[in-house]
Image (cartoon, rainbow over all chains, first blue to last red; front, side, top):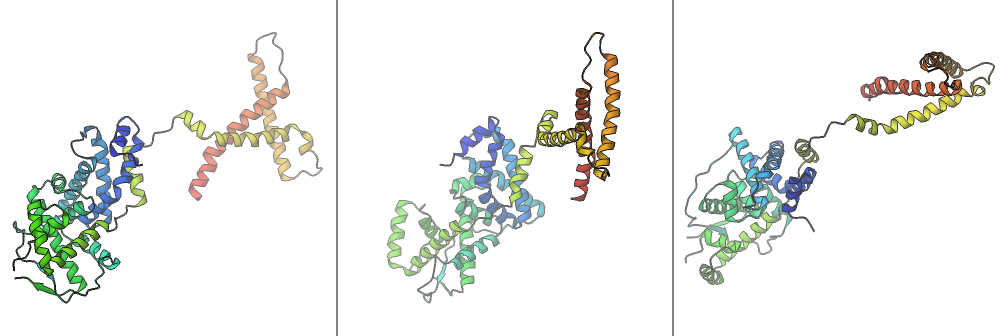
Length: 192
Length: 184
């Protein structure tokens, strides 16, 4: 059974610094996924990730367990990536509608009945389209689906108000929906 | 017909919709195929998004992180000796063979026409003889009166061993390793 993060941190803080490798191995892939989706560049993402892990190591003595380690750590990852984005001047703020959309578009009645929701094609398309989402949508969607964080945890990581997180998450999922529909060639029918 | 809002559909899919509203959503879905399809689609997208493959890191990332947080300690002299113990033992083995060869005249005096290697051994041995005589003389000067004279042969072996070790260590450190580093 895998040791909890708390036990590994305790070992690191009592001098067994090499135990930190277990924490790194545990979180590096999910953290890399977040960094990659925010920065869209592998080299930048690895550099940011290295920076985040080093910062987390040095900040371990100040970690107070008010939140889970993963929430605390992903806040560091998010901030490092956001800083890198602002330096590259690649942040894209999309105007938001604060109220949820009153109109939704669903696939038409001509939807093929044998649509394979489990297909690898859909998985590949979804993975690709999530990677294309602009900030802040890419990070919020990733934190929600990959890190499986709640709205509150996402708000804690990103620093956005809770209501903003919800709206942006919904917006991101509708953007994803539109791009998936477009890729799969479904016909649209606007509901009155 | 009023359809469900985006918020209602997504909160219903996520399981975060409030109980009171959930009942209304469920009732609506029973009669509205379009919203039902939208729920199915959003469920599929959520499931696929959760199961999307993660981005792997490079192999060097972990090394770079650990090199930064736990830098390698510089080896102390004792640790360097211990780490090179294998090399020292190997040199001792070589040296032992040399000592045996040099202290057993029949080994290198057998042939009437000595080979290049034999001649090299002879030269080597002559050099050691000279060093050995010098050190023995100097050592005798330092010894106090009345002490029993040591065996010349034992002194020869001791000197041979020490000088050979030093010579081999110097050869290894300043010649062989440099050649290996530059050539390989």
